[in-house]
Image 1 (cartoon, rainbow, N blue to C red):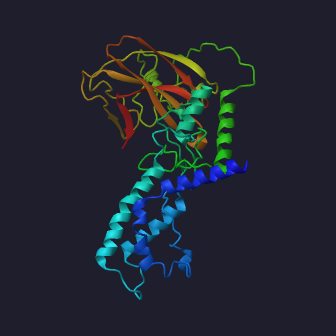
Image 2 (cartoon, rainbow, N blue to C red):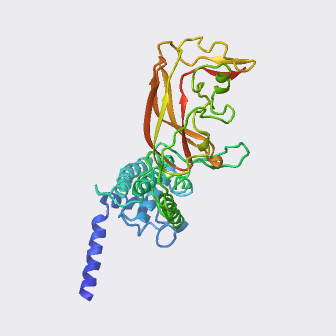
Image 3 (cartoon, helix red, strand yellow):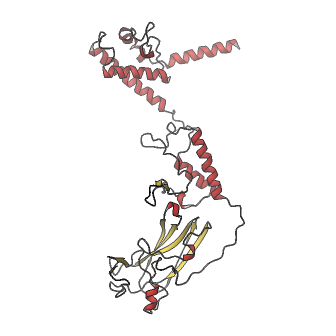
Length: 370
């Protein structure tokens, strides 16, 4: 055992000697002549001692000490002004010699020798991994979604814009513009607790304990929007004028969304849904609305730029969760000729809780107050 310990000690000593940089040894005479008086065996100002300073820059403390020496020489603060100053050419030679050696040492510390190293996931990688691992299809897990705090009501009380599990995570440290560098992705007990919490949250989202009821297709006919004119329906005026259409709508702007009132607060049952609707477009003329100004002082704004431009219908997902504010994402768009013929459009998509779906007239005329 003693022999083994002896050999290990000898090998460690040899490794240390091999790692020493001869370029640094060449500058030891300069330190002895100008620095040892204050940083030598008899006196160690600032707790720095240079007569025993090694030359193995793989040791962080040694590297930092040599860096401190170089910084003081660059600033011209050492040796002190009361002490004899070395010739400028001699100091410049030491600076020119130390600078590239230390630069190489820093590069070597950052290098992994061409080998991949184990690191933790950054928060975007974590979110995507949890999404794929548990097959979560919630829109907040989309790679384009960026979480953050927002004051939805303008009262100074903020809430998160999303419910994805990394919404409370701090932004990861960046290195040269990248946020996936292993040396910057540090770990802490606090972050570990957040990682465990994020995993538990996704498990709750991905699992259901209650018995699922069978799905049944639902059909909605006109009038689709019955709560006043919230859906942009002009059905009341259309019926007063006895126009032969099931229901008449205007272009959606901030409002004017076409969807069943039953699901205004969300579908509340995450699943894949197929949305199918039948629609027709009529009278693609600039003056087609005629005297359809339904309020005094109102204006009718034409949406399409050309009579040859087809009508456009958009399918949207909408979140109706009040505490995080409204949000909508268009997931599909169709063109519709204005020839009066009925056409059927269908699209299949995942709808999560508390999202719903609606359609909107993208480029039609709409009513607006002065």
